[in-house]
Length: 149
Ligand code: RB5
Image 1 (cartoon, rainbow, N blue to C red):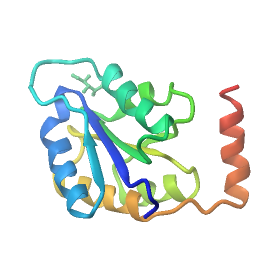
Image 2 (image 1 turned 45 degrees about the vertical axis):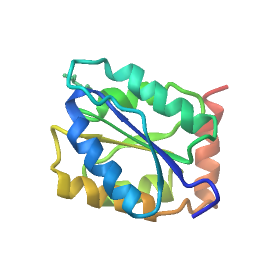
Image 3 (image 1 turned 120 degrees about the vertical axis):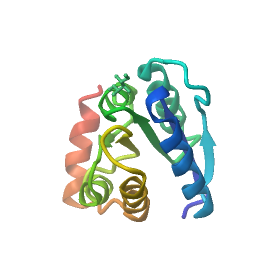
Image 4 (image 1 turned 30 degrees about the vertical axis):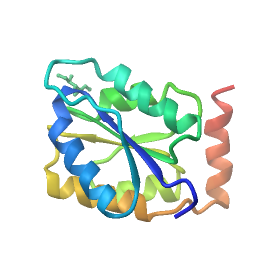
């Protein structure tokens, strides 16, 4: 783990319980968890929570981010609008590993109405254990970055 081991978590109302389970799981593995909520069950729009987490990753304040909504899709779309963010929705461990190794993803999105807690924690573990491979993949990630200009 590098010196910055902060990881931000956020969600909308649809994923509070799963987010809190992930926060506890990740903290137990030694990560410095920045859980920016929400904590109460009122309906709240996923774009603002995706953006808030993405800003902390894009600024370098947090090294990685995990965001959740009902499907994982809407909050992922919002996060990916922030320059410097590469976020993928995963419902399997292979994809979670590959978005780190090949796409240098810095955020993971999960759908709390799609997967259960056991699989979600496995996906998180796969994402956090993987490292970007660089090489030919760096060229491709550079092309993604260029699209932001
Ligand atoms: C909220 O009902 C739901 O639309 C949201 O959690 C998410 O699934 C959107 O992508």
